[in-house]
Length: 157
Image 1 (cartoon, rainbow, N blue to C red):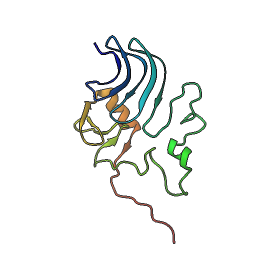
Image 2: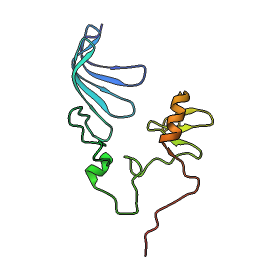
Image 3: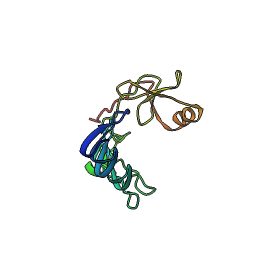
Image 4: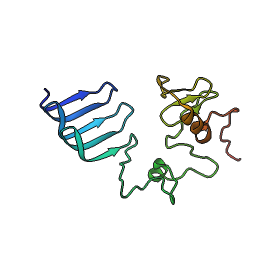
């Protein structure tokens, strides 16, 4: 079994780097996700006891003092760090500029959703999953859709 310090790649592509004991995560270690972000924790026999999740943009999740998108402050994290854009230039996602959504599809956060095929693909167009009825309805109701007509910001003279 794995013991000591090392790395282990899971079937999902996520990678653990840290202390191992009896084939389990044990001690200090970090789980790096394939899409970015990671979970740094103190592990006890494969279970995290204390840890922090960091998103790809550097935002750390804090359950008690969560400063991002609460009921009073709806800014994206990049707006908190870099400030607002000038009036008339909206920021539609945390990623600026946002991903270009393929025609007829929706941006559902982890990829693009095609309502005709009911398939979600990641931003590199690799298959992620088939959407069930509940997810289909939620995406149509909530997520950003590709524009039917192109619109770009035109500064006033």
